[in-house]
Structures are given as C-alpha cells and as structure tokens.
Image (cartoon, rainbow, N blue to C red; front, side, top):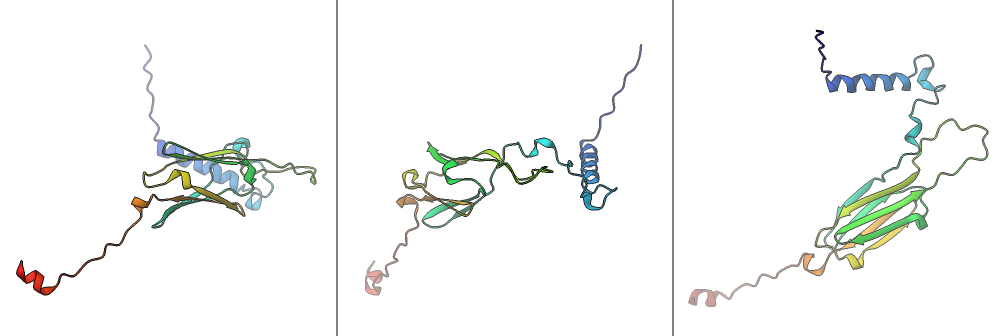
Length: 165
C-alpha cells in the first residue's frame, strides 16, 4: 500500500507568492516600469461590474450620501426605496475609441453597478432628493421631525417658591 501524505500550504504564503508574481509583472524587469507590457492586468478587469465609492454624512436635519460615478449619464442612474432599503443602480457605457488603430489597455470601469443601503427609521423616504453634478451623485435623506434635535428651555424657579416646598 502506498502512503500518500499531503502538506497543507499556508494561505499567507500563497498570498505572498501571488503578490510577488503580480509585482514582478508590474515591474517587468526586462523593461523599466513595464511600459512595454500591456497585458499585466487580467482581461476581465474592464468587463467586470464595478462599485462606486460612497461617503455618508449625518447632519442634524438630514443624512447625505455622496457617490462618485464619473462618466455615468444621469439618465442611466436609478434610485429606488423599497421598505427600508435605498438602492442606487446605474450603467456606465464603454465608448469605443475610433481615432486610434490599436487599443493597448482598458483600465477604467464600465458596466452596471448597484449599491444598497439600509435606511434608519429616522429617515423620511418620501422626501429623498438626488442631485447629479460633475460625476458626483448627492442623495439627501431628510430626517423625520421627531428625529431632529430639539432644544428644551430650562426654566428657573423663583427662589421663594423653591423655599416653600
């Protein structure tokens, strides 16, 4: 009978090995800075779905989502609220370069995207507004009146009333 043993590889070593391989392709040692190596990124990188980056800010009267969606036409952006979920969907079309004979690389993101956010109960969904300007989508989520901070006036009791108690 044959005794077959398998060595379990350390996942961290595998990760470091893959990183080393990628860095080697990036810094193609035959040519400085890899200028002649046009294919060091996987071919699927440009065709994959992408996810816009979003910053979220909370202010006393509203919550503001600011998403970077450069190159996306406003008519291709759809914002919906269903229950307590806010969804931002869209599509960035790839424009073919007709001026060049040969395309060496596509690194910009194209295709569809979708981001979903859970809304807190303090948001008034019927009053949500969205503005798109220069590749930045700003979604304003107004808070319901009960969630807004209210100042409570502190009354000072008259000294004689306080002593009589």
